[in-house]
Every structure is written in C-alpha cells, then in structure tokens.
Amino acid sequence: MKREAYAAARNRAPIAEVLAVELPASGVVLEVASGTGEHGVHFAGLFPQISWQPSDPDPGALASIAAWREDYPGDNLLSPVRLDASASTWPVDHADAIYCSNMAHISPTAATEGLVAGAARLLAGNAPLILYGPWLEDDVETAPSNLAFDESLKQRNPAWGLRRREWLDGLCRAEGFALAARHQMPANNIMLVYRRLAD
Image (spheres, rainbow, N blue to C red):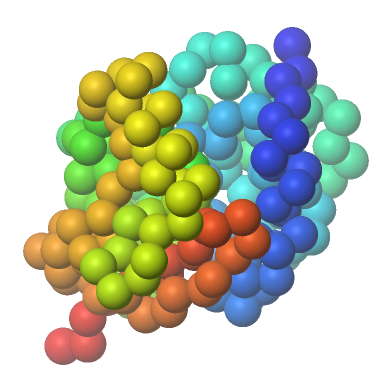
C-alpha cells in the first residue's frame, strides 16, 4: 500500500528548515494534497508538539498515507481525511497552519483557488498558509528545467502547468492574505508563506 516519491525524500530536509521557522509552536497543521504520506510522517516526527493532519482526494494516496501512519511510533500524526481542495466544504473546520506541497501545477486552477478559499475559512489570526513547489514569477528568470517541466505537464493534461506567483498573490489578497515570506529552495522551487493582512 505504501507509495514512495523520490522527490519527497530529497526535499524534506530543506522544507523542514523553513517549517521550523514558519509553523506555530503547537496546534493542528493541515496538509493538503499529502500524496504518498512520506512528508507527514517525517514532519510529524520532527514537530511532536504539532498534530499533523494529512489529506488527499485520491483513494490510493489515502491508503498509502494510512500505511505509512501504521508504522509511525507517535500519536501526533492523525488519520488521513479525504479532502478535495476545490470543494466549498472541507472535512476539517479548523487549523493553525495549512501546508501544501506540489499541488498547484498538477491540478486545475480550481484546486488552488479552493485552497486559498479554504484557508480563509479555517485560519485565524496570524496562522500561515504555506505552499511549496515550482512557480513562475514576473521578476525572476525561469530556469530552463522549469520551462521544460511546464511544457511536459501541459502535454500530459492541458489543465496542468506552472502557475504564476502573482496570480496566487491576487487570490490570497482577495481572501485577506498577503505574502509574508518567500524562501528560495533547491531544484528551482520556492516556499511561499501567506498570512492575514493586518487590520
């Protein structure tokens, strides 16, 4: 049942370094589009004071997450829930942070739009919305490998492709969030952190 993703093992250490700075000291972190479940196991182990809530819309992914969880020795990795980011209602009604890795470019834009809308419903105060992955940016030259990746995604599914960070900024701004931090990551990825605009 367990699935493995090479990228998950490769990128988890640099992602964890950023999460250590951006996550709250305690509370519930909702991971949207958890995929194999490897990130959840790793991060739950690193942050035992946090309850890590994995989720995914795919039954195969949920089975993989559950299989990884069976071997997890702690009690802060919660049972995975089926969550479609584009849905107007989610099976989770509160989170102290939302983390989403590598979803925006391999899903229709409605998934990212729903992610931001869901964050607006669930997150309070200064709670962060954290996204990891490759993004296009107006003032940053796109790496040739990312351009090739974008083309390959669009060939696989016309609804997929790298998204513009400025587009995401606009979605977040409409829901009351602003870009609070941008972390450059290995392999031409970035981590974007959004928090509520000050009143």
